[in-house]
Length: 182
Ligand code: SF4
Image 1 (tube, rainbow, N blue to C red):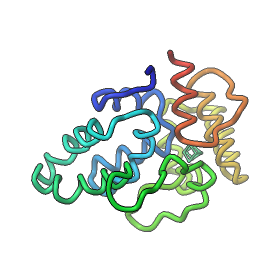
Image 2 (cartoon, rainbow, N blue to C red; image 1 turned 90 degrees about the vertical axis):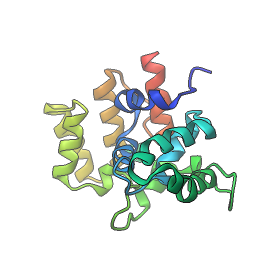
Image 3 (cartoon, rainbow, N blue to C red; image 1 turned 30 degrees about the vertical axis):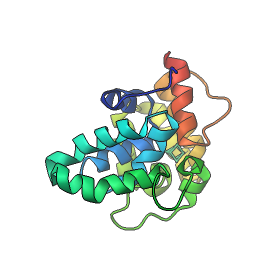
Image 4 (cartoon, helix red, strand yellow; image 1 turned 180 degrees about the horizontal axis):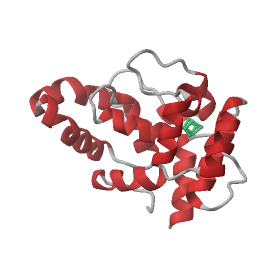
């Protein structure tokens, strides 16, 4: 399966194919503030539960120790994969749902186009290599509350192709990107 990814590939994939929301999540996960919300994309992309545990363990164990990781974090990760506790299909988090969510203080889910201030968004897009007219066009869409259009334009600017379907799901952004890059 071409979409199967291993933990070591995540950095590379994040650079080339993650939408802004997931890039942000991954960054924040590395600062140990939020971890469970980083999982939907992994799952959608075919990352296996055990691979995910290995990945998150390597991310966290330096900071919290592997014993504490297993006790406190592994449960949450399994939970997200529906192995324990309430079964929730996180892959159903469409852009619309993410955009309409209200992230609390210290939360890092949400859509950056909707939830970042202009300065942060500018910096994040610059970081993705988006500047000039493309950047201004995207910020213009954001001002008019067309967040998914802004994301679609970011996709187009970073991939050099047009995306006629538009972006409606973080996993779709990822798979469209992989289609272009493979
Ligand atoms: Fe993520 Fe969707 Fe927002 Fe793009 S529009 S950053 S894919 S939530």
